[in-house]
Length: 80
Image (cartoon, rainbow, N blue to C red; front, side, top):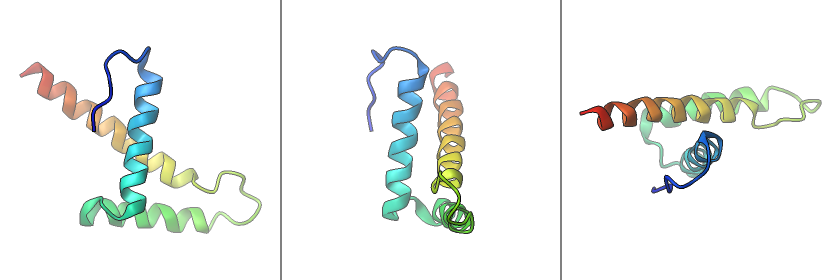
């Protein structure tokens, strides 16, 4: 996936990366370890109950953590 460096600010880029990660995981293309983490987050979301307004709370948090991890890796690659 390519996201233009011309996006203004970090927020749009982070949100796009996070949404792409969610799409991959929700489609089952995350690999064994990431799919296990996604399944656990999904299970936690399902356990939130009907009063919860954010039914993807744990899955979104997972995707944001993965996005942060990717940013660290990409910054490391850029330095070498």
